[in-house]
Length: 429
Image 1 (cartoon, rainbow, N blue to C red):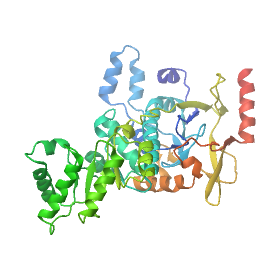
Image 2 (image 1 turned 60 degrees about the vertical axis):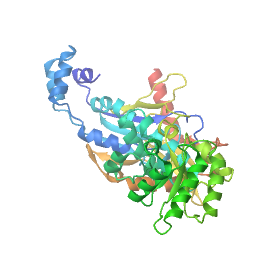
Image 3 (image 1 turned 90 degrees about the vertical axis):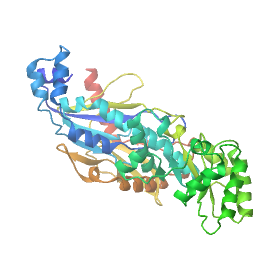
Image 4 (image 1 turned 180 degrees about the horizontal axis):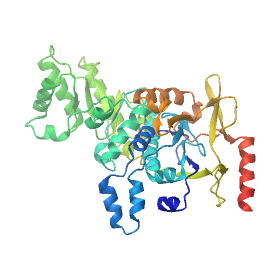
């Protein structure tokens, strides 16, 4: 397509809109994430000599086209909802305004980065909500779909409110707090569970000890025995439960620790956790103080994909749309206005970008002429803070894990509806 646009000298400005038409099942909202990766990609996008040499071997592109690619630079503007903003169906997560060859070329990478982090941040937001203020640690690295996904996922989890990650490279790359515990293999490698605990606690006095390698309650007794050996130096912060009936074991472990005079030793739970299981544990009164969540958060097992679409909505100053069945498309540049009552979001209106309406406009210009501006320059902590604040401002039934009834209301403005009808009549001839 890029070669064809150049051949036809189609260089005029286009608007491409990124959105989704439907919420995944078991999601009441999505949490926008991945914008930072998109902006970095657009800033750095170049065709290097090796890239051009490979394209030349395909037998599809003439030399003058490849020479033109060697000078490619993205020069467009990007309008987007800042990371950490709750979003709903048909609302643009971002819109790219650029010469059509540029805007078309970046489609797949823009979709990939926004899809990955938005899906993962949205799932993590449910886990964080289920934990009810208790710390959640990302344990997802080992079973995620590749190293890049694990890095981007750790970042998305942090935006959504996850406390720390066991992925040390993500900690280095993004400044996320890192945390972790010993593995079962460490205990297995020692001649006794007590020896493993003792040596590890000497190295890391405020550590978390994994107590279920052999028998969970016996492991708790070993921790208590360690305390009795040297109560003056005992500083173990927590025990970790990683198998069995977590609720029952947490109650029994709590009773043992309290009777031993160790009420300050917390209980950390892991083992195939997700939002629903965490909610059920806490509803049952399980005395669990923190959670390690891995596979089900890292793969977003219950809703692993989002039907993102990246569609041309304007070219050369004219609105563009499709008329395909069941695939609604709103033409032109747009804005989303969110209204509030008593600091609680009440509804959204998708409008034309030129409209002035009451409410908070969600899309901001984050890149101008290929350079980041405004919210496009903000750091990870700003996105994390926004997510916490904006999720808290959603109606309680939308924040809940259960399906929202009624769904959060989103409507199209009268002006945008009329414009869409006018464009549709024009397309229909």
